[in-house]
Amino acid sequence: MLDFFINSAWAAPAQQEPGLASFLPLIILFAVFYFILIRPQMKQAKQHKQLVSELSKGDEVATSGGLLGKIKNVGDNFILLEIAKETEVKIQKNAVTTVLPKGTLKTL
Image (cartoon, rainbow, N blue to C red; front, side):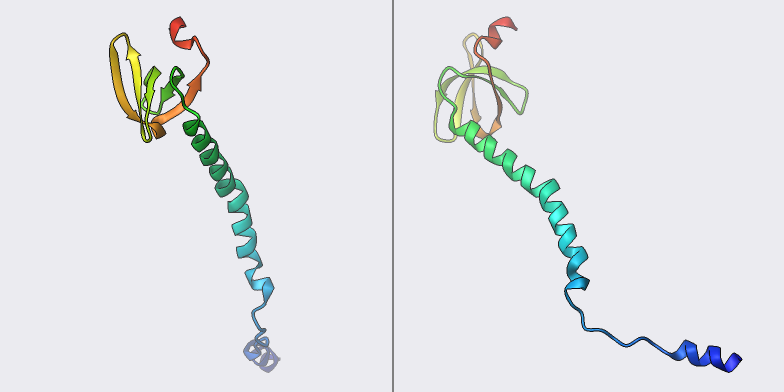
């Protein structure tokens, strides 16, 4: 009886060729990452690029640094932002995160 267990223990299953089934978990993992992480980030980047390209003089904006102000001048890469009466700062266009509704700064 002991001989049967020893012989069975040495028997190994035959090796199978790696096929599509072995790569299926990786494919599923990539698909999940694409739809949960990559695609929404690309969509958000596209929306931000459109927002930055549509900036114009007179828009009231909020920046990533927390500044609120009114755009006085728009250049290729920079904007001139009036943050207080007679106080202007020059910032990069990409720092703008939100365009505020007209008249928002008057209520602050």
